[in-house]
Image (cartoon, rainbow, N blue to C red; front, side, top):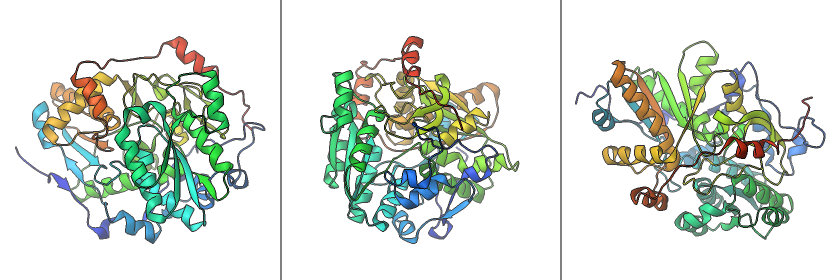
Length: 458
């Protein structure tokens, strides 16, 4: 096997980014503003201050500053597990017998097991700087809750996590990691909040959704002195923090004169995909380079490929501001059949606008094919990937096989967001032949769309 690049490309500590990159600064059409559901008016910093940390609000609303400094204390924390490796998947290339070159950015080499720690530590830092007692949040598959628990433990903050009930039951060990770091973990929807009680009354026996968990976390944050709510995906600020993934990836590729043809990432709320593609998208927007970007989502929760581009609530209880995004409706609850994360009903406003402008494409894949790709990858590359990451692996393999058919020598980069060692219940179902696919019907999606608010943009 001829190796024209190392198996793993590492950056030195001196090569690590000192600033986050804000792709909104280069977007000719900015993502739409968050809006007040009662008035339809754009939300101001004052409107958002009861819910979010002050500095994070500034980042959320800043569409113009291209580079935002990473605080030194955060960079010191990053140095414990960053830079993460950019890996050449030589063994996968050989197995597929493809002329394509395949690289993956591996974000699972930290205790939380995923890329989520990149934003969790930043948000916990600003909460500490503001003098808060603690924060509340939601988590779906559990990666975000784990990462935030670790970050809050580091800064001595209390952390209250509302975990989607189906994941709470399927992933007890992920839950125990959060508790080990000192967080309180509640299955959502629960009887501990007013909105949780209302959801359970309307949907008795529901397995929950991220929208439900967000509603509960926001209610507790607003009603608890010294607390704020933090979110692990979707928001502009989160994609900003996750830009460190793409910045490191681009620096590593540039060291060896490599220009990717396509960049692939899984997409649930958008944090990993947005972070990975940001600096490359910036070059595309500025006319400096061209790339193909592919967002991969589950067929059971197809926000991009079957959703509507509209203002919608980010939560099921309808207590959050409205965001303009590709959405299935805040009332949409993914099937319990769905084994991974990526179960949010909407998509990042930044990515939604880029997709709407035709600057990236999206594909929906079924979970049995996703786990087939995960197993194939694990057997040759030696990492058991998270189900979320495996959506990107599926399409990367598909594209590499196309290159085999055409003889094209494309360079493919995808994001390996984390490891799947807490997802063994899902792997067990796949290995036992019990995993099935579920695709919502048009009628089921229409029921979700019926929950979209009627708002006139102002």
